[in-house]
Amino acid sequence: MTTIGTSVRDAARMARGCAEPGRLLAFAAALFTASLVVVTEPFSAATAPELPRAYVETAGVPPSGHMIRVSAGEDFQAALNSAQPGDVIQLAAGAAFTGNFTLPNKSGTGWIHIQSSALASLPLQGTRVSPAQASLMPKLVSSNTNPVVSTASAAHHYRFIGIELTTTWASTSPTVQNLVVLEAPGNTALSQVPTDLIFDRCYIHGTPTGSVRRGIALNSARTAVVDSYVSDFHDSVNDSQAIVGWSGPGPFKIV
Image 1 (cartoon, rainbow, N blue to C red):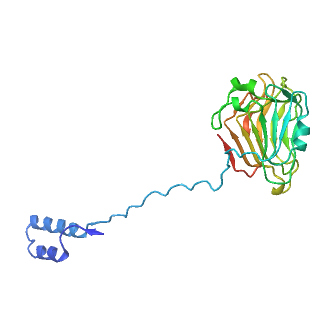
Image 2: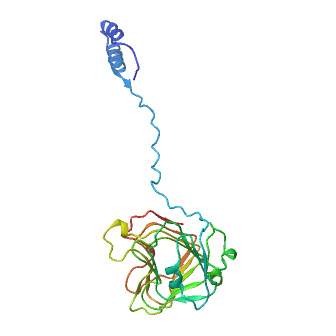
């Protein structure tokens, strides 16, 4: 605190000689100045925002298990059922696998990679793909209104790399609600929520004319969609979303 002006004692001396009007005005000004106080607030630096409390790690983890190669015409669901944590399911680039596939719950914590046989020709990790690279990707296709990929209760640690996911649905009625559903059917506990799911450099899309409302339903935990191309999701009677979530605990990473 800093006081500016004369002291009250000095002002009193002035009062004894203030018979003249001019001196009276000077005395009043002195009293005002004596009481003037300037308060300087201490400087306070702005508080930085809190950093995220949780992260989704998307760096590649080298597989430690077996390679399961699936050629055109072979059974992708059978490969999913037999794969163990640490395994790689390699799908033939350019091949189409039609069905409604479910990611099973496996014991263990290793990742199951589902990747293109032409992965080496795709952009490196950290670079977004585009439809121009579709010929280098195997294609998972739904031919009905059901999801092309969904999760079993508590399914975990699946990483899709360089995969095209789509549908042949071209009608506006009925609607494909979700192309990819990451949630536990009828779950009632957090332990049932699917977790640790990554879509890396994937091409995920609907069709130009069909009502395909949502691309990915993220009702899961620790899930990421990175460097992927997501398009053609629209509905003739409702709003639509490329990626949406409403009941998953997260965290989510969408880059």
